Image 1 (cartoon, rainbow, N blue to C red):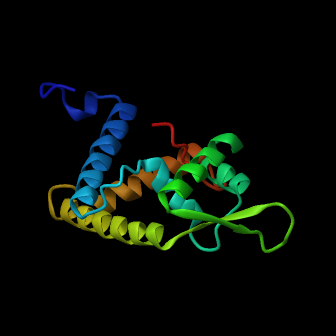
Image 2: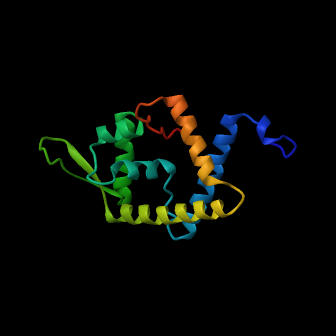
Image 3: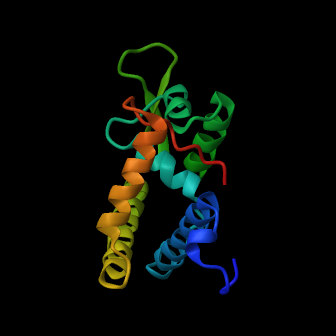
Length: 157
């Protein structure tokens, strides 16, 4: 994107992707500055969100993330090695395991939430009308998706 090209001539998918990339990069930088430089990627944050509350089986995590069971198992293995999740016996018994967040993951989620809210507030005080942007993006998503439940946000980056 050059400075000579007006925003209304740039492809929407490019603007959405670039906006996401820049916002995520700034969020990650600020999270690292706050003392949470533990090399977690957006995928890990999405897994944390999917596991909040009572946790989930690896199969349920795969469904929530829109990835294969094998990929979900690798994510769980990685997060377990890092101390962010643990496997517990499933309350319904059997061989299934429940994957639950540890205190470290909950601490990370709280810090990430603070950083994200601060960043959004800062952007909202500038020239960006985040309320209007959020409303328009919501309408775009509903137009493309219909009235059904939202699909999984696939961590393809």
